[in-house]
Amino acid sequence: MKHLGNVLYITTPEAFLSLDGENVVIKKEEGASTRLPLHNLENIVCFTWQGASPALMGACADRNIGLTFLTPNGRFQARVTGRVKGNVLLRKKQFEWSEKEAQSVPIARSFLLGKISNCRKVLERAIRDHAMLVNVEALTGASNFMKETLKAIPQCNSTADLMGFEGSAAKIYFGVFDHLILHQRDDFFFKERNRRPPLDNMNALLSFLYTLLTNETASALETVGLDPFVGFLHRDRPGRPSLALDLMEELRPVLVDRLALSLVNRKQIAGKGFTQKESGGVLMDDDTRKAVLVAWQERKKEELMHPYLKEKIPFGLLPHVQAMLLARHLRGDLDAYPPFFWN
Image 1 (tube, rainbow, N blue to C red):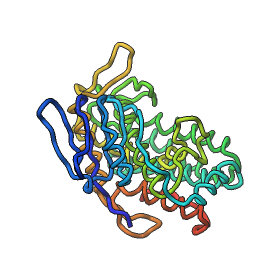
Image 2: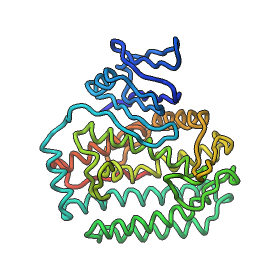
Image 3: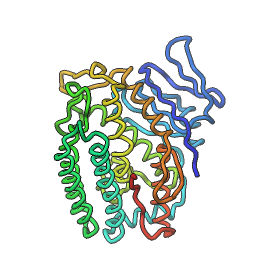
Image 4: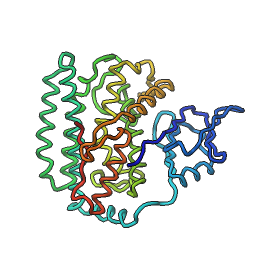
């Protein structure tokens, strides 16, 4: 089993990364720098404009260290990848199946079953743990709707129908999401899911965390030899990591939604850490972004019993494990792709 590695987050906008021997050098200002050994790193995520030297990019590609560039506000810019690795026959099978609904729909169904089941689990846990603080009737109604949707999905035979169910379930789920916010409701209310740009603090937090999850899911797919841009549920579009979006659907409620709610409800972040621009978009300040990144890393270290593997793994390995199981299905080692069901 793969081990959970370290992720280096560069949040200082003026920082520039370079290579010195086997070390990454972080230059923040003239005469000031930090050195870290590359062998300790699994990923480097830069929220900067300055970038990195070609030598460091090459070293990361050779060592299979993910190197991703985001804007200081968390919008994706680019990922550095080296030579295509993995089994070419596996990728050919992926491309072939993505074009045929007979093969792609069963995989897409599994992604969607995992997502809706895990969204329902988020609601059920809120009812169980905070019955005196939440609108039990509203959450129960949403949970029951999702329960019926889960019964209907196995009969779907087209991705168009599946996306219709996905849209309906997402509307119901986010329609009651505001009931899950127990504290700081004046600063972290939630009316609807919006992005590009996010128009309130809660959406800004969710979008930032979804970006982190997308990056880690795409990296996991590449690691097992799959192409993150060729999906089974989401349609292929230039520049869109469709398979990464497919795979992260079942992981969003567990890794992102629960963490976002915890950060707000436990008052680990505050409304003053967000600013609304004249355009209406909301941005996080540096201190809030760092607090979120620390919480993200801590969450990834927590362990759970994987329902299919029947062994304990860190939450941070979920993208890799699910990517590995998908690759095994495409190779013919598994009869079906087993989605992640949170217990």
